[in-house]
Every structure is written in structure tokens, then in C-alpha cells.
Length: 237
Image 1 (cartoon, one colour):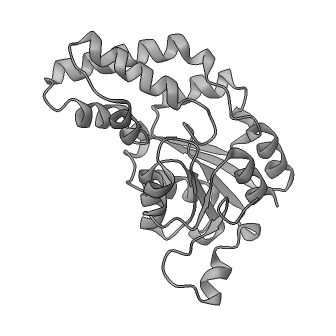
Image 2 (tube, rainbow, N blue to C red):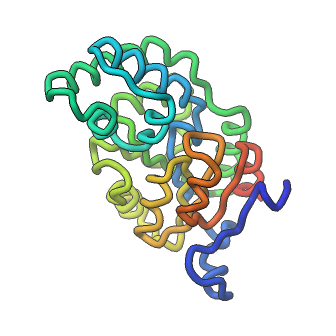
């Protein structure tokens, strides 16, 4: 792995004590975002939003859709289509859900992810998910990917607020009885890194999802990786 693959970016001060606080080997709680981090679903999300918007007379761009991934679905729709009425936004949300569900069989976990989850579990790590998906949507993809058993807790935007509100991370910490210093959060959007930063939690930005390397680097994650393979190597040692 090159130095560019894993950038050890310390968010404030590069002194020894801060480096110690961010040692991944010491982390006992690994919290993941879902879309674009564990599951290769960004393309379907973009396609679904185009289909939903166009069905109700609205247009957007791929980049605009990518920029709202990580937020709750309705928050994203409000940003993409501010001119839509409340009833139109609800209709877009329904059309999006129908198209996404009908085509979600085409969104696998990234190739090395399941092996990585198995290894982390064998190492005694507690694994969790904090996602902008609704509960019904997350449960559906957990069932489809047969991955429920890896996670001690999952938290969704309709249960704890939309990212970058850190409430879902707080809920996971409380449930697992872990401290912020025990945990690391991994995600592919700027909202993921902002959420972790608000708590002072160690973060890993992944460049293979929705946001670009530069967009994520601007958020000053603790670590940054460019491939799922690099993430697995960083976390598993």
C-alpha cells in the first residue's frame, strides 16, 4: 500500500499523545457507514434519484445526487429539489424507494468487505453501522447481504437524525458501553467525517464511494484510504 493509500492525517495536533489516541489497534468498536463504504450502491442511488425526480418533472445531475448521499433521503430531496411542493417531495421519496427496492439485487458488498468483517469479528472487535438509510431500507439490505450477524448494533437516520448530527454515534456508544476513544468511524461522505469530528472520534475516510479524495481530505479525517482493500489492510493489520 502506498503512502497515498493511507494518509495518517491527524485532525489537530501531531503530538505523541494524540497519535496514541488514534491507534487503530487499540480500537474495540468499529462503526461503519453503509452505502459507498461497505456496499457498492452509489450507482444505484444516483440512478434511482434521477428516475424518481424525472417521474415528477424534476431534473438534477449525478454530482448533485452524490453530494447529498449520507444525508437522510428526505433531507437530500429537499436539497436537490427545493422548488418542489411538500406533496411532490413525498412522491419523489416514494418513487425513489420503489425503484431502489426493485433493483437492489444489483448492489453487492465490495469484494473484500465480508472477509474484513469476519477477521475483525474474530479479533474480538465490536462492529456497528451508522447510516443515512431508513430502518426498513437498512434491514432489507442486511437481509439481502446476509450480514446482520456481524453487527452488535445498527442506527439509522429515522431513529437518530440525519448526518452530520452525531446522535447515532452517541447511541451506539451508549449501547455498547464504549468511550469515544474506543471507537473509529468509517465513511465515504463529508457528512460522515463531520459527524465523527464533532465527537472527536477517530475517523477513516474512504475515497471509493461518493466524495472525492480532495473533498474528503478537506474534512481532515484521521486516516484516508483509496480502495476497499486498503481499508481492510488498515483495519485488520
